[in-house]
Amino acid sequence: MEEECPQIVIIGGNQIKQNYFNNIHIYLYLGGPVGLLTAIQIKILVPQLNLVIYEKHVEYQRKHVLRLNKVTTFFGFPSHPLLTNLIDNLPSVVRTSVLESQLLELAKKLRIPIKYENIINLDKFINAHMIIGADGSHSTVRQLVFNNKMKVQDILKYVIEIKYEVYGHGEKLDFIKYQYRTQKQFKYVIQEHIGSEKDNRTPITIHLLVDQHTYEQMKLATFKQPYYLHTHQHLIPNDLLDTITIWLNVKKEYADEKRVEHSERITSVALMIYQSAEVVHYQQDKQQYNTCLVGDAAFGVPFFRSLNNGIICSRKLASCIQLYYGNEPAQTEGGNFLNSLKFEWTKLVNQAHCLLNSNEPLKAYSQFVHLMATKEIMIAQNKANFLFAADMMNKINGSVPWQLNKWSSEDVDHLKETIYSNNQSSITTDNQMDSNTWEDEDYDLVQEFDIIESDLSNNFQQD
Image (cartoon, rainbow, N blue to C red; front, side):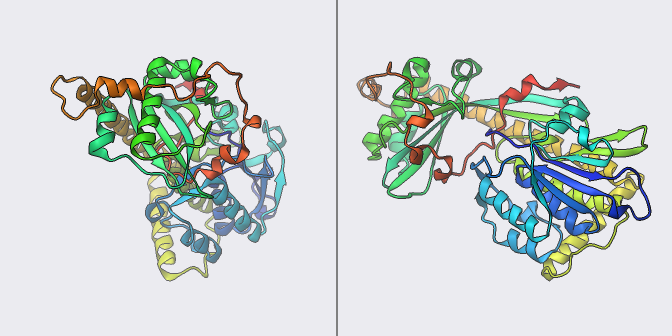
């Protein structure tokens, strides 16, 4: 996963007073859509609260592609005209930077002040009434308040990702004639995604599902310091290099693919699942709930589930905060009738859920998140099991002696011919490459994996 920016929502104030709305502030330190949506919804639902956004970077750092399930993810959102219009115009596939920029503009229209500061501890918020950590998988709030204790922590799959560009329009292989027989040559399951043509170039991404041993050999190939096929062949395991070489040569010969020279970039990824042991903290000395987690700070899963889950949790948390502060009148007029109806229905369901939890909204939120995390982790595990079964079937298909649709040994030897002969040349850094080739925002791709970095395991504590 690309470098994340912490997000912190803080509802501040030394004590609850009758006029406490004048003294409470929400400080949002963010870098992602979940934190922004949390702040926007709180501002709409509890407009009496003062909201301040803290941003680490002036410009958003992440530009990878996200997939939204708009029907279910945004169901029951506050029926505010500006928010409704933004949601209605969102595509189902959108870049992180684009979504974040649009949400930031909406926050400005709602007159939420924005400050730029890197928060590394919570000392300045010692008198805060409530802290809401929406600071992603490397959550500072989770580490400082919850000691990074995890209920679930596991690596589902290891992935090698190869990105490159071709001239003109990219084409997939004919499945029966070329793709099936090529896949049988590999010990890894391969998935290919073809982007949209731009300036006579098309970006292509290949995902290889590999074993842990191969991943360990390739783990130095990161997003910040990737391997390049023309300079790092001596660092790539032979069987993995053969797989990449065969696939690219088949695409060249049978899909008439004209690759942009030296555009092949290789990275390694571990797909993780994790769930924080607690998402709501109760402060005994103040006899009140003072910290919540939302989004990737609470739990994370791959396979394009994390963003949608985080958005749903932001809706639940904003609704619970509205109840927590006395269900004050919200600024929800002006949306269309259908959205208003969905919002009112969701509000009734949320009120009933709070009653079932001793009329404690944040306790209801905690239960909601844990149930969702359990369900989503099970879905991710089932998909990982399906990929494992596909991997086993591929290996069986490639080993049975009665195969008809396969490459001859002469064909395989030919396809293994090295793409670049000078594989011991000096390593080329990102700064030496053509920036137009390496900008991730040029890869208009529907990525299969909503990536969560594997180095999280170094900071987690198992509950």
